[in-house]
Length: 209
Length: 209
Length: 209
Image 1: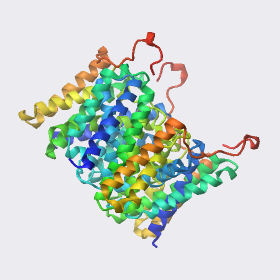
Image 2: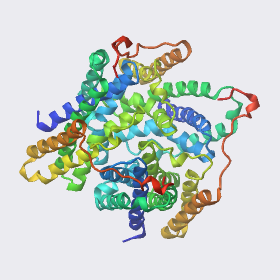
Image 3: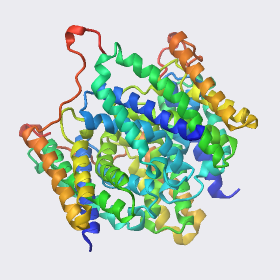
Image 4: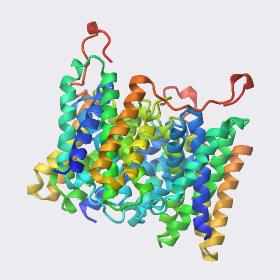
């Protein structure tokens, strides 16, 4: 198994765990857990494959991917109540999944011989879109958009690192990508790292918005 | 007309009716009715066709599909006020549409010679995703996710029945699929059939979630 | 540069401005601005390209598109506070973007030699879906669905004008499309033009809905 296909499986499993945790917050039944877990696990990669016209879509060509996601969902259905805080677990698992999915997306796009701007975007899409679909469908505030956190930014920086280090070989670039993405996202969750957010004019000006 | 293409037309018409009923709840104008009706009617099948790379997408190759959906929307625009309860009508029409769209999706995937896990998933996608798009766009609580109801589960069981009975011929498998799906969904709506849902630790444990 | 490729760039830039304005209402950081701006700018055209199987998707083949959208996002991040009313600016920019994106979609579909019903729908998809994705992801009430406004209707009328005038040459048809779309949308915003919306039975009948 290559590094790239290992990344695919691990990212699917970890994203499926986050999907099942969100399903537990919505109190779904076990098929609902599997549905949301699969949506989250394959959403970003599916969009990537459709956009770059990779055929077949990764899980259509390899349905074992869906078995992995379903197993993760079943595990959460029976074990999630053992967690101290499901929301905290969700945040950190999602950070791990992001840091695995971004290099997985970058690797596929590099392998398809695409230019660096498209590689960058495909890394971000693979990392961010599965979680976004999960949150939109379950009507949660998307993690992607939580104010003052690094999320898309972490994915962007990781993908950019991979593009910059592509000359050192693919595996080095992908590991750097995972490292940068996880460091920024974890720093944001653990230490409150952030970029300045947009602020409208001070309130004294009145009617803005 | 084969059974399969008849399924396509009927599922489009019935899903369009549900889309138009949701549009009536949002008090849109007639073009808004047609827009939501078409989105609901072709959403699931479009996703299926894009994922399995069927060309052209079914309604691009046969725009009469859109005429059927538009006619259903216009009918609802002028006649919905005659219904006793639009929400009840929506639930039952949606159940019928689900029971027609799942076999339609299964039939297309079988015809494309895909493996059984993909056939299963394509049946579920064709059945569930159009309604999900309708509900997300109109900001309704997705029917797919209503607590303690069989929905994805009904689609899953129907698609699984089709896969198990594929040896008896396609038409038998598709009819069994429709029967199983409708029975489970209708039993859930009419008699409250359900699977156990996830419950967090009992409240005495306190701060879970 | 042809009229068609100019339309692509301008529609991307203007939709990106609207995306960034919505991001400013959600108080995102600068990468969040770029993310929402790109999603809005390329969402509709991407869906069109995937549905008609145009390869590659327009911005995958020409990443300069993404640079234009990012520049628009950065501009808004630093300058939006100078606007009197960001919501009013959003409405009018979105009207301009709609009136540019509909002919862009119509032009691509005509160029691909598709039949007129598909040309009509691709114009509407290119015009409406980017803004819809923006609003669903940011949890705003979709502009597409605001009660009693012409939006999908304006896109429909513009695309229909292009189809009817196709015999006069492509550029004439596209200009007419832009004019009709903008006139109807602007009339709706400025003068309250509207179609009758659906009303349930009068309240005296009681329990409807």
